[in-house]
Every structure is written in structure tokens, then in C-alpha cells.
Length: 486
Image 1: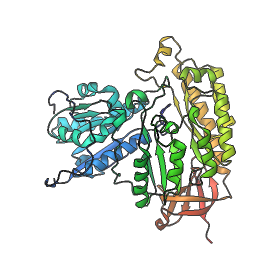
Image 2: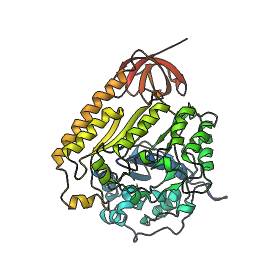
Image 3: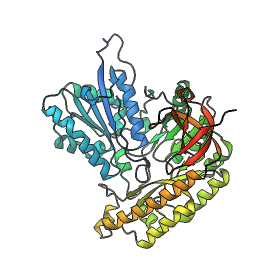
Image 4: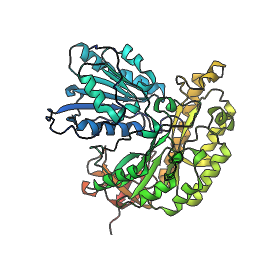
């Protein structure tokens, strides 16, 4: 998720696996991860199914809930109809994500009205934003909790399973925030996310993240490094460090590593072949991180650097604290350090007050910055954000105009993305093999350091290995290739 704009990935669904008393808050504030008390009888296996909307942070939070609930006997199911516990981990960065959650919840509410015995919960940013209103709106829902409920999800689920309706939207104390250390049992692949911070101290006028995830708190670096070691012991080779604004990591904690120092420390861990991170703020991209692109071969040649707009007028209204010129200067310095850097970004069109001239400046930035891909969205008004005042003043961009601008941006970006993929044709690149192709039998897929997905004929015994391939054809979002042997 970009903490400074729309989610840096479109909403994703990750499948894991009666009216009661008035909503209550659980009494404890400490982490409840860990084994059950000694001597406790092992309960029979129960089944849990998650649906996750939104960003990488939500995917990561789902993994942490999965890990903790496993200690209470919950096992994965791919069939929601057999689940004893259904949890929706929600995103509120855009109205569309909220609508998706509402639609997905419907069949389960109907099942409960027909007498199905299932605990139904809403977690994540919509839960934090709406709180009691969700319990009032959906009498079939048993529990509602925000992102700060993740560290004690076991307690919340236990209360709901006892027949209580549970509400927990309290933000935990930043000084003692209990980041969950349990490893997600599903992290058995080639790559894994590792959170390094939560929350955000920026106050971009369009963004609801500070409301739903609270102020910024950095996770202790020793805990981060321990998690990375645990993942590499499982065979993970690519680590993606995630947070709302990763390049401000550690700055509020005396004696803590900076983000650049954390990158060097992760690179020193045996088994780490590639390091990625998301999301970073252009204002905070320092010389020390740029230097890391010169020094660390593990740091990949791909960077997601959200810009949101190419117009200084709009950037001021968004309260982004940098100019178009500053952004391009950062890009130039990064490419001086890593000439093959592939740059992706986030774009919002139709922000209140955006003129045709402002949008033209955004369009011209695509070429100036050389974006190989982007996540682009129409501005979505979010409750409680300062940008709503601009709408109240009559600065709203008509929906048809915003839609036309989005179409223009996405059309131009697809052309540029395809040209970038085709530029690899005939060249030999290394890909880290991730698994089988989703579409073709006998074909495996992997990414280059620059994040280009390449599909290659091959067998699954190559998963987890880095192999050289020759790119034979580039498409808009991927490429085809052939293995180079010998």
C-alpha cells in the first residue's frame, strides 16, 4: 500500500485457508501471540478462511493472523463453506474497495440468518474507520477490529466464539507496539514480505492511512533481522520490506538503524538474494539510500516511488512537500547510482482543482521520469480527509472528466510498458524462478531484478533458483523467454 496515495497494488483477494451483547473492548493491550498455556487440552481442528483486500500491508497482516490462529488449532481451508471462522481483512484507501467488501460479505450474512454456525469478522482499515457502525449495519457480524487488533487476534476470536460481539478499534501505544514475530505458515515460497513499521506521520490531504493505521512506529531492527533469518531458513530468497513510508524508518527512535543501515544489515544475512521495499516517499529519499544502490547487488533494480501528480499546483494541494523538479532530481540521482533502474509510481487523476494544464503536466512526467508501469486511480473522497474541504469549496473535478483523464493516462502507460518489455527482446537476463505459469503447463515464471515477469518453458525443480534466460518477446505486463543452458 502506498501510504501517500492509493494502494500501490490493486485490491487483491488472498484465500487462506447472532446477535449478542453490546459491543465490548477486550481488556488487554499486550500481544497474545505464542503457544497455548501448558497443560491445556489440544482443541479439535477448526477451519479459517480469509479474504484480503488492498495492499501488501493487509496481505502481511493476514499472514500474521494466520500464524497466531494456528496456535489455537485453526487450519487453512480453501472452501469458505466449511469454515468455522471467516475474516475479511479490509481496505478503505478507495471507495471501490469498501464496496467490494460489502458485496463479499453478503452470502455469509445470508448463511448466518439461515442458521449457519460460523464466526464472522471484519478486520483492517474499514473496520478501524467504521467501527461500531459496522456492527450496527450488519447484525450477523460477530467481530470488528482494526489493524492494531492483529497482535491479539487470538483473544478477539476467542471472545467472539463465546458468543460476544467484539469491537476493538483502539490504537496501541507506539512505544510498546507489539509487532507480531510469528512466521506466517504460508511463507514457504521464494519471496516474502517483512513489515518494518506501521502507521504514517505524513498528512497527505487525500489519504486516510493516518486515521486507520495511526502514527508511525518503527519495528525494532533486531526483530526484523530475526524474521528475515527465519524466512531464509525456509528457503525464501527475496525479501520485500514494507511500511507506509519505509525511508523514514528508525528516525524517531534514538540509537535505531536508519533505513539505509537496515538495507545493509538485511543484505548481510546469508540466503538473502534480493531485497525490495515499498512504499517510499520522494521527500525522504536520502543520499544514503541512493548510495545503497551503488553498494548492494541484493537491492533490486526496481523502485516504486509514488509521485501522485506531475503538477506543482496539485502537489501543494495534496500536501506532498516536494515539487516536480525535486522528484526528477531524485530520479536522476537514483539512475546515476543504478543506470538500469526500473521506476514505477502511483498517480491520482481528478484531484480537486486539477485543471487541464495540471493533467498535461502529469502526462508529461511519464516520459520525463521514464515510468515503466504505474498504479493509477481517480481521486476517491475519503471520510475525514482534508481534501474534502476542497470539494466543499466547489473544486470537484466532474466524474466524466476524471474518467477521461484516467483513460488517457492508462492508455499511454500501457504503450510505454509494452515498449519497455520489448526492449529486453534478444537480451539475456537472470530471473528468480517463483513457480509455475498460471496459464501454461510446462512453463515456469520468474522476475528479473527490474521486476519484469518472464515465462519460460521449464520444470518445477527450478523454483527458487536464479537462472539465465533469453527474452524472446515482450508484452505489456510480462515477457516470454527461453532458458540459456551452458
